[in-house]
Length: 379
Image 1 (spheres, one colour):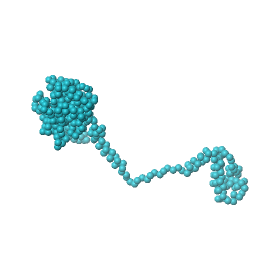
Image 2 (cartoon, rainbow, N blue to C red):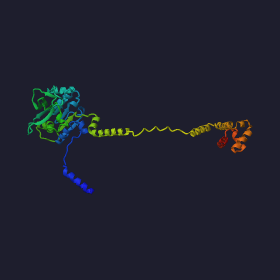
Image 3 (tube, rainbow, N blue to C red):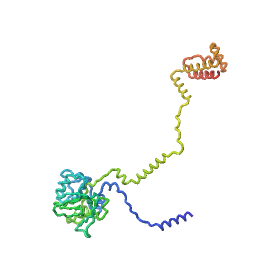
Image 4 (cartoon, rainbow, N blue to C red):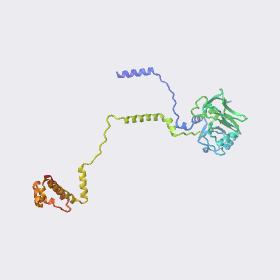
């Protein structure tokens, strides 16, 4: 019967439910958090280009190959002195440099200002425009069939360009955002924004194809060469390592929330009290006989046996004073006789116990103490 019910429920489940695929967004991994151009670099590698990445200008082998395309992320690159002149010299020798301007409000490197001024370029902020406002632009490539590419860029600033021919210009109602100038035998592509290159945006609109054409195919077509694998494309200064706590929170926040809930539940559970409060346990105390034994051992180790025996004799005489005060007037021999008669002992034994003895042995000491106790109890 149970098997029949299970089979029936399983049949109803498969008959009434349809299997579908659900896409859900996952937090970026640590590599993607530290490298905002990771998706673009992987896309270019799959397109057949040789992609390398450098954290800053100081680690860049200089000069790059003359046929290389080098992207300088200006917001993250500290340009050493005279670097602008070296980059321009490399471009004029045939290189292709893409440079991203600093965001409005950020301190732009002096050497970067020199680089743009040598080209006659200057980036101006769009007053009254929100920093995250996106402008839709159209990028037209002569060798591409199928019309313009749809690209989004932040509209926070625009380029003021000199009176010279532009090989490529991408703009919106807010001004020009991407311009390409010929410099010597090479080219410079100036960007006001790198939104289309970032991991979160490269899958939107035509950003992926725009990246491949701008960084790779455009350079090949300018040189009049066919597409070939191994064309070097270098990314410089795209390292954006945030706080380690930010990386942990962005990847493991569900686990942390679960742990926090469990800790709160545990604290609530251990804070509950059922019934009256239990009394504090009493402090353990030693018995009286333990103290007496300890005192006796101390006296024995210190060689004070005579004092212990004298204390026992005085206890016997005190008992005689209380019960038979007249006996204290008798001579010692007569007193010993009375004590022996009452305790059922011989007079010689009582006399030996009541007399003082220097340094008694352990056996003699125990015998005398036991005998004096017996005499005291018989009174």
